[in-house]
Length: 462
Image 1 (cartoon, one colour):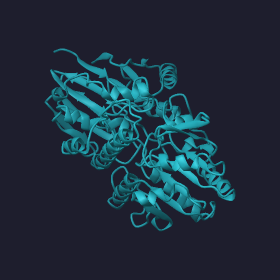
Image 2 (image 1 turned 30 degrees about the horizontal axis):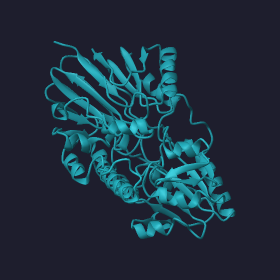
Image 3 (image 1 turned 120 degrees about the vertical axis):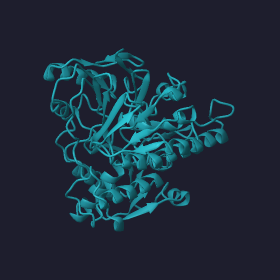
Image 4 (image 1 turned 30 degrees about the vertical axis):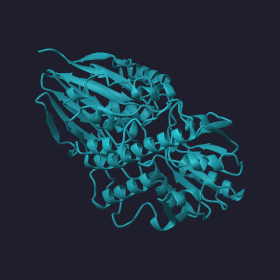
């Protein structure tokens, strides 16, 4: 029987575009199907023809709902993929709202570019539409954690909790001809305020592991204290705070922290606005998961106690409500997507608030190279928004400790729990320096064979 193979189709030279194709016995299974984000040359890859005929893929397994892992699904379905999309129940529910929002933004940005005339194309078109999203959503097949699903008599797929966001999972694939491969997806941390830590890795011949923070440690600084100090000094000088936050999980973590700070009297009493319809929809799903005792939700959470402090936040859904915060006349905290400032309503808030030194932007997550968030982090004096440049005079505060990605030590600790040594551990989903450093530590500290693969590379499994 011919050997099975693994193709690296994304997330091998960046933290975006996760796509890995496993092939065995004439069948194929795609693990993750994400969008490329960040640098223009990365985003252009989203428009390249898929390396294999989408209709030839038997199934897709999605580790979690974030766009860099699920955001290409509508294009795949539009172009001929008709098989099942395996995901946990809450990944499927969150992915639906994430993909709907993505299509909305793609179509809105296309229309805006056409109207303003700053697109390079005479007739701009979106990468995909809401009709493509609806098609992909119909193909989701929710599966329970630890349950094994057979695909095409060649693959046995098992999802286990990854602790990154609600519903997130590692993906273990057993091959009918022998051998197995484990994908970490995005690994969470040991102390998430809402979720249980990642489940230990099962035995696998090959492991594919993320390296987002492969060369960094989150440090011992208290994220809540840094957040409180930034809010309080901004309010004292009469300014407002903008927190660009991923709508799924990061907004929920920030709201939990703000509730605790309010209850302890550690932040000044100012209005808190959540300005993201997608974040509010995700918030409702998180609340439901807590009420239903979802298997990856922490056991010590009280289903009758809202950890997000509904009474103290104002939820904004309409455009008119959002526009009222583009130039607030009083100190406030605005939480708005997207987390890397790559699109969404937060751009309109930043256009109004960045030029004023009394205001503050707090970055609470990973900022990929090429994103506006990374430009702010790196000290840009102006950033481009909607075709024009906006001066950056506001204070920029980085609070990486809020990340729900495992850092390098945590990834190594997770790998170290593997019951047996894999033949190879492939390091993906990281910028080149981060991936190379994690590879070095895997080789030196675990004594394993660690490899950073190349885009498009194919390797043997088993």
